[in-house]
Length: 345
Image (tube, rainbow, N blue to C red; front, side, top):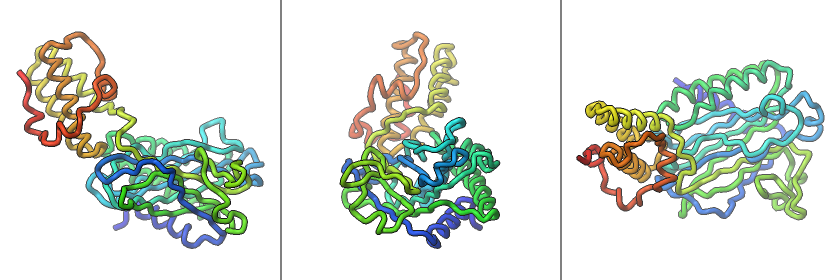
């Protein structure tokens, strides 16, 4: 039985494969350091989307985007993470939309990263705009911790399917649809920009365009290219996270410290074991980072419980990383759950 994400993937693939208008697409590696499987993270951004000038001239219409990423995640190959993007309220008029994250930061577990996007031309007074808002609210929940990603992704995909069905029933199709697979080479997965533009190779010959600062530009002049329905996606890869917002773990750390201050030893040990277990099993972190973060939290809780930090304070994972940094991966390579749960007395 197919899932909503499967049906969404099939629909966009059919749009892409049956396109009647010419589509130019290209990937530009940005020269950044690649990331190896289980050794870093990836994140997908919308760098730019724009409707052609003749469409943008009408202020009651604006571009919107639906996107799906399919990759190995949490031990499950072929996980689909869908989302929709539309301009915020009050900014629906003509203009280019830039630098919007399409996914949270995801551990790269190897294999192929498949991308699908569809650029939509939306009427501002259409109730389709309201539907995009509602589905967009659901997709905003695809943030750490991603342990419940399957359930949320299914609801998002189901909502996007309904939007697409309404479009098709009204005889509408996306302005352009694009599908692309990105595969690691011998060095790893390369960061870069993916361009899709509604144009012939005569209008946009190979070598005549590139990406600069996230924008589609003319190779010769370096000036932005206007007058085309187009989008630019950026695949960002990094060996270390730049986002350590884990509110669920922050709450547990605070509860553990509160239990220690109140002399509730059993409750402290229970919460301590709970947060450490969640970190070690987290789908949001690479294997090395699970041990590094667990060690950092363990050391903080144990020093707090021993009276070295008895004053009241707010402790978060992000704050710990900023203050102390993560332990070196080599020092925690052999750290297992049993060792983590041993409490220093």
